Image 1: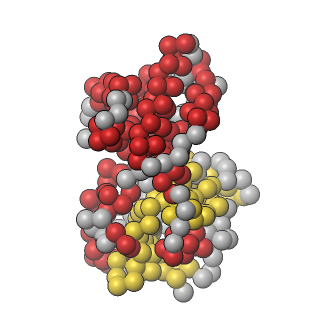
Image 2: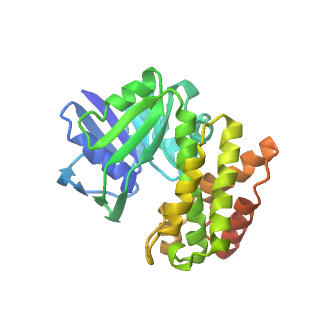
Image 3: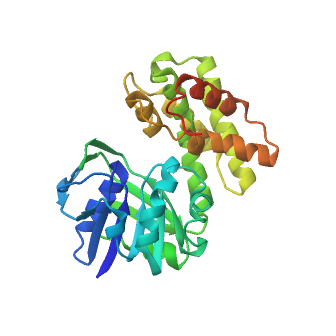
Amino acid sequence: MTTIAVIGPGAIGGTVAVWLAQDPAFTVIVCARTPLDDLRVETPQGVITARPEVLTDPGKARAVDWVLVATKTYDVESTRAWLNRLVGAGTRVAIIQNGVEHVRLFEHLVPAERLVPVMINLPAVRNAPGRIVQRGHGIIAVPAGRNGADFADLFVQAEIEAAAHDDFLSQVWVKLCGNCAAIVPSLTLRATGPVWSKDMEAIVRGLAEECAAVGRAEGAIVPQSVIDSTVEIARNSREGSIAGSIHADRLAGHKMEVDARNGVIVRLGEKHGIATPMNRVLVTLLAGAGSPWVER
């Protein structure tokens, strides 16, 4: 029996936990801030449920085979107490978070050779604690190698397609390039489509081009088509649509992952001597507009 602990049962962590719990070969443990009786996910195929063991006290945790961290990037330190108890001699830790710095954020807590960075595209929304709607097919990418391959194998029976990639770096930078434009509606609190103009297109394209340039300097392959797609998605967004988690968090008054989504482009741009004025300006403006909630 493979034991799997999921830290952070939000939209992503909760959906992953429920899918894994459908496999009788797995024992799933959920590590949460508050108690949950069960987990329920509405999927395109129907409703799936699970009643995993739910822990709210890290002191009651025990070593497991896998730890899946699905917290926000600014909550890394909150996982320390859990990891101290969950990580044993053979435990591997998968980091299911936004951004491109998964290993850097956790290597002071877990040896880097035990860490598996995870890129996930999973359209899921949490409506209430333990209640999630999965709106479409999920995709997971991890680095090639034994750890990545073993992690991907966990999802063979799930409606989440997982695969190991030789060029994982490109996977995360392509995703970031597609996501970086969400800072615009997060700032304006409006979808970009209904207010589209040449100037709006220049802003969105500038954000994506800067991200692609920095990603390429880091060694990623980011095709021009990714930039064009980012622009088209923004152009076609409808009134009232939510452009990803950062936009949803701003609307809800929650802390936002600004550093993981756009601040990282600025920081790594400085490292490579690449100017990122569009990302820098919008990060600064968003910090000023929502300073109580912006990650620093």
